[in-house]
Length: 292
Image 1 (cartoon, rainbow, N blue to C red):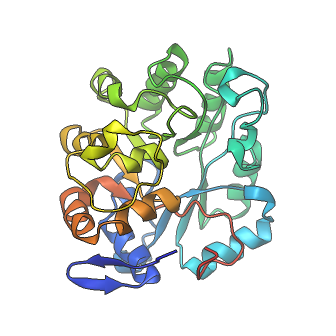
Image 2 (cartoon, one colour):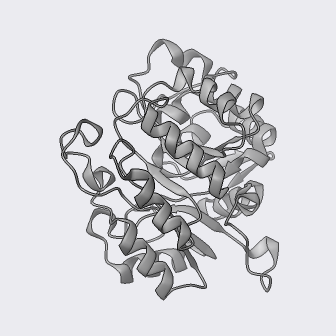
């Protein structure tokens, strides 16, 4: 995988890209993402997207991974509880489809490593007690509702209750957009952005990042499109037109979006620098090189 990107007319190494992304990012302005007063801004990397037990990774490996990456603050995103339902594809996508741990594990990990780790709150949104479960961990100090990665309509009743809760607690909702798999209806999500102006949303994953390209609207099945990007895709427009939505640069989808067309990426970063947050969302135990 190509781990470089042209930005400001120079080629950045992967490590430099992480630092640049963190400085461009709005993570420090999001609720719950305050940075330590004793650190200089230029030294801070906030990773808003990591998981406990990600594909079986040990806690020790996660700690070592984040240290190797040079991350100052990490936000742990839990899975919902394991259930057999349409929202979890009859259980196939439990654990965020990546064997990730749930609320209690993330909470305990963050409590044990308070200086460098924060935690989110999550639940399968169409469960009857979903809001009660999410609120339980927000009251304990959760800083985000995430990762919302379930097979539901983006404007379903359950999701709208989540949006209302997020506004009440002034925490963002991070959503994994994947065509016909997770969070359906990106093309009509503007209605939710308008209906819930006091809710902060963060877009993430394949369909979110594929749609920086205006031409992608004709083939949503291509989750990792390559080649030149035509500005003005759904994602580009949402970031431009709505103050309450941000973009999570994490994972292969974010990397692909920034490396497939470096000329477009340069303009995209300049245009949306206050709307982009850095996340890693990598499940390796290395923290560097092609494995990461």
